[in-house]
Amino acid sequence: MSDLTTTRARAWALTRRDGAVMGFTDHDRDLAFDGLSFRAGTGMTAAAVVQGTGLAVDNTEAAGALSDAGLTERDILAGRYDGADLTIWEVDWTDPSWRRVLFRGTLGEIARAGGAFKAELRGLTEPLNKTGGRVFGALCPAVLGDARCGFDLSQPGFSAQAVLVAAADRGAILDVPSLPEFADGWFVDGRVRFLSGAAEGLSVPVRREELRAATRRLHLWSAPGIEPAAGDALHLEAGCDKRFVTCRLKFLNSLNFQGFPHVPGDDWLLSTPRADGDNGGGSLPHG
Image 1 (spheres, one colour):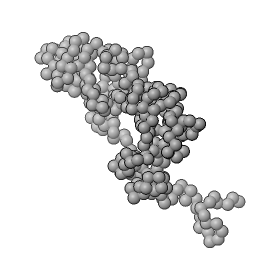
Image 2: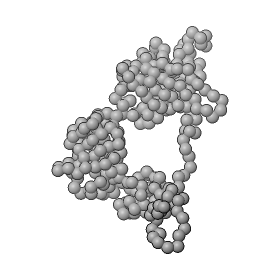
Image 3: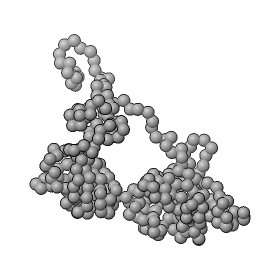
Image 4: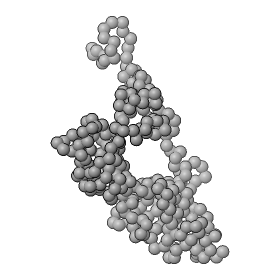
């Protein structure tokens, strides 16, 4: 082992959620250990890692130029690095067996500007910031099709394949064939998944629909990270607004409803007992 003050370098191992693994180093030559090659010449740098002995979140940031063949702006825009697992080592480049872990966590917010990026790094205690426990409310907290919901979206009538006719507002507005077999608003609160084209693999929820002369216009909650183009293949999923009546009538899935449709609302706190008049739950009389 040599003097680490003159032979130390940093190495990053990045594992995306799709399973792709990438290695980078700020050394001027490639490094290799743990069966992974860490590429040099990527322009990667890292700020000082802030670490604590308690449950406080360790955080830092990494910056770099979009110069590596495997690290592209298109993939960043598509969200393929969101939540990726990251490990940073300090390593003796003359003998990589001498190394220590500086940071382990995930990628957070990524900002891009002028052909470069800056990524927030979140430590392993970051999930402790998330609110836990069950919410008791009138709406269902399950996601349509997940284990708690138990509904099979592959059933006929609850999904459709379509070809994009036109896109506007960077892909936030999509025109697809009219799909007359589906009722108006069938896909509201559902999802559009892109099966081909530049946005392949991305999915965005649907905010509202418009039935037009020959097309069905879908307004998405946000534009996908990469703008789609006419001719791209799409997969559309039926929407659920989380209400019990929707679960019962649209999906015939009331036995799996995870909400509490009869829980009193906030207006119940303002109610007063009365022996006569309309007890239908309307507004209290004034004066």
